[in-house]
Length: 243
Image 1 (cartoon, rainbow, N blue to C red):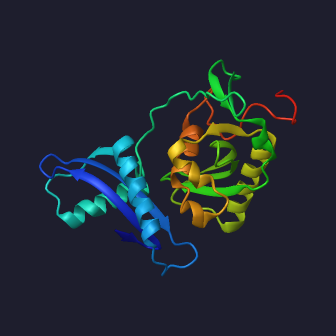
Image 2: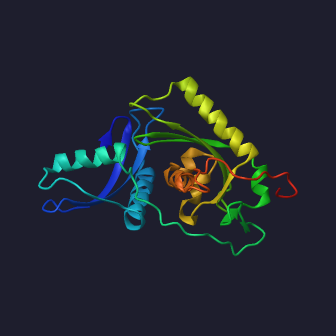
Image 3: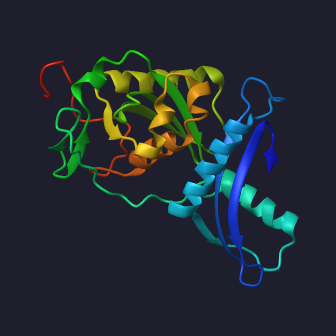
């Protein structure tokens, strides 16, 4: 399925008699060249991502019954753009590490237990930007992470979309700067699932896309602590100790 400037890989199950729908999707955004054609390797990577999403985190909805095939696809496109998106909710699990040198689990400020990255993660120099837009939120993320361990530090900034208004490039840049400042001063700690760690590569052609890693960050952001979304962490790191 092709949208404006995007190639969409879609897996779905649909019962036209009941309207029961289950789907998952992966999107390649043609940001630089709208005429770019995916290579077989990139296409296979998207097929694998979509299949894993459909298996582990599908979107489950009930839609109108007895739709035509085209109307059913239109409904899925609408759900992807203005509803739950490309992937369903994540079942929250606490990760623990078997390698004490690479990561640790510590008590957090709100009484829960949270992940703490390996100290070496703070010294990574290359950072990346991500932007995730829903029907009512524009989420800006700046992160740095280690492909080998999956450890990630990120900061985020959220713009509440009102009446369909979207930010100008200048104001979007302000949100990215806020997210970068939060990553530097009080980052959120996260460990990316092993199957998606290749998406932390510094080179986009190597990782193909960062959608799954991005969704794990978005899931973390949307999991509130003390009533607040996790756009920033509670502590800083000085290279020697956590304070």
